[in-house]
Image (tube, rainbow, N blue to C red; front, side, top):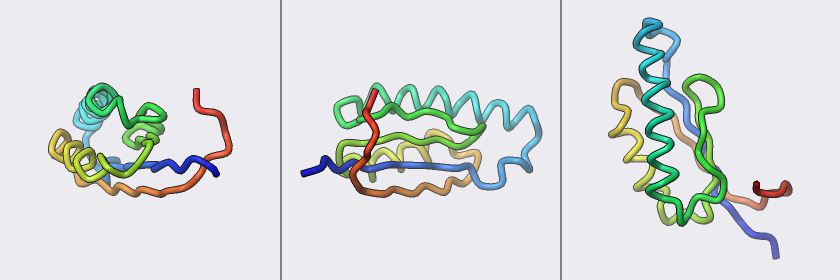
Length: 97
């Protein structure tokens, strides 16, 4: 039986409308927050959370137990924008590094 994972992706809403200085600070804060996510939830992180494109991120969890807490923690840590976050559950076909 295949191992099932939870993929979590997020994107800052309308971040391109921010000034360049505010957007740069948001991106810096996002990287710092994702480092904290990877430490705090290390027992359930299957693939580390990382910035994918400017103000978008993704990561992989071993299950859904921490999903609610993690997403709300990120929203509280990065309140300067609204976030769209989505999660999906399924098997993966590539090796985890």
